[in-house]
Image (cartoon, rainbow over the protein chains, first blue to last red):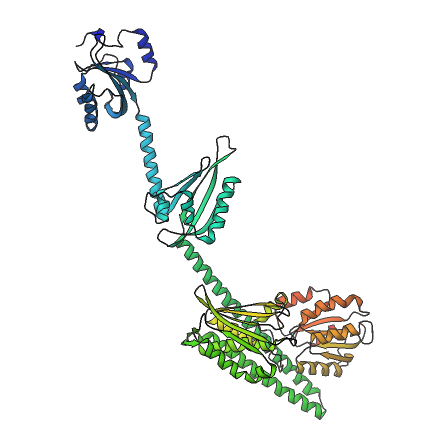
Length: 494
Length: 134
């Protein structure tokens, strides 16, 4: 046992008071005799009363230090006083209650002087709650990360003053970047698909400057070049006084699968709506046409009963014949429309736009020459299409003869025909410099067919109605742009 | 109801027009009937005669579906000159279309008296001309 006066802190009341007021215990290790002096607090921290035990260095290591941590402490004790350096280590020690707790041990070697032996003095702190907190945090982090991976959700933060940005591991995964790679802000934003960049930048800017949170859907192009739909939610973060915006925090979610499903669903709803609309239109047409013939038939028969004049009777008889002819014509048209809807399975053939157009122009030769119509075409950008031959002919014929029919008397009628591809679809454009029409007033009538088929040379509408039906039956679309006295452009997307 | 002196029929269906004219004559619903197969021509006539009581019709029977300008265009143009007309004709819209939207649109116009679906019944004739002698 060392004599009591060998320890620095012992029997110094002032020291004792100071030591008692600290939440750290103090120890002194005699490096020659390998014995300890502990302050009251040191004992307390380990759950003992002062002086209750007095282990030497080796006893302390063997009985108090958690087996895995023993080497750590031994290494330090052995290296002193050769390396006269301050140390801090975190180890587990056995508490009087039989459980290991985390402690921080700090120390500094003191060489021989004033007759005292070389020693190690330092402190002991209970850091159990801090370590537990850290462990909990780590667990939480792992938990969040795992959830993030499952939900395909990544988090990000953009800090202001100074500007910095960071994101979570899942963000890298969503962007198909190496797992722990964190790009800077400029690089991060460069993965946004260009067409969405304005809205993304505006959202971030509005959140940081005006405090407006956002929730947007946009597309990114990943590091591997894949396009992915994502949902981005961002919220401004204010300082403690709730006055200044100091950061933007939010998350990214990979919603590619949901979004694609949603788009497919919308497309099929649109398709159903269009088909419904066509059916509705068709039933109106049938009802309208049958009714007008029925009306005429009833009226004429009524008059036949009342009439006695032979000339008038002959006239009414003639009218009956006309009604019958119109009726037949109507039935032919209606049949044609029904046939269009059922013919969609007919084999398509590879057709050259130029050949088909030439054939149609030849069939209209007399009219074209007589009126002096100029027809120009350019099929360089897209010379061919797989389509039902009769339909392509009918579409081109209707659009060209429409351009001729609604020409302006004061200018040479010019019809321009061209094809190109847009978004992987073949597009046909037929423009004229004719009368044009007020689409606001007549737009809805243009492709509809409200006209009756009675003996009217101006039976307009039926051609475009059939054209529209043929195009739509094969999954395409037709639209028109027109201005009065400027001309019209019909655009067919096959 | 005042007796109808002049009826104007705007319709491009020649068989219907012929039959209507004959019925109006036979039943003496109107002393005279004029017909137009185009809205534009009917409007020209009305603008020229807007201050001539005898030439202005008492009743206009208007088809909706016409080539070129249609019945709705007629109502629009009629609205523009109505204030300058010395006599206000009663306009009845006739259609083969049982489309409820058309009927609603017609009845919501200040210038349209009523909307009928072809063919006209005896009651319809009665409500237009105020008479239907047997």
